Image 1 (cartoon, one colour):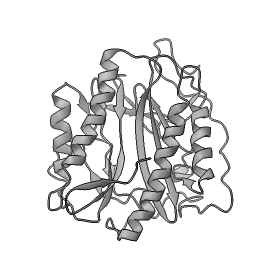
Image 2: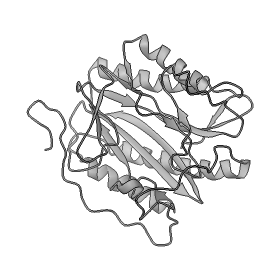
Image 3: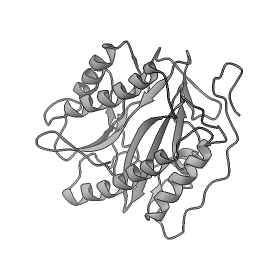
Length: 287
């Protein structure tokens, strides 16, 4: 079991890539070292929004399926299998598979892992946290979402972290309105998180999504006046706060993907893809 003598996570064994049926459309970056993501724009027509919604619904339902299987004794590789099979069964491509060389169809980030955890032979234990991040690509559009689950029962501190991270996301969503700058989103999230003494991760942010997996638009989760893009109707992006029980300094593992808190404090994350409307925001990643 890939944990050290202190119970901290270590890299496990990664199984071979899972196959995707040939008739499923691939994103342009599959098989390439770098994606072509910039310059594709962040605003969408109503028809394009519906295509993102379709992809987002598949991603959300895939997380439903994965979440139903989360329990002590299950490996994160098994969770990847479930998510992969759901996505391809619905005629979509799992966006992470082959993105900049990423080897799996979802990200599974446990305990002190902030994001981009690679599914492997890690066995879930009672009381673990596991964040499942799935993006589906269908009809030329990506829909991106994640949720944090508790494995079995956990401490009140851990349960509160998960609940409050979800509520922080909701605060960020409520801050969205045409004419505001995107930094208002991070201001709302950070103000809420500070009430409980949580760290708000700064190095990983929300982003534009749709035609591109990551368009270059940055959505901060902390008070960051330098991000002054004005929110407009028809814009599509993610909000995905990562809160910790300790510090926000991070280490990247030798796999060049897995990001963990330097102080090994536990962390939770929730994410939705949304479209900006005249009145605020509409979620596109709901089951």
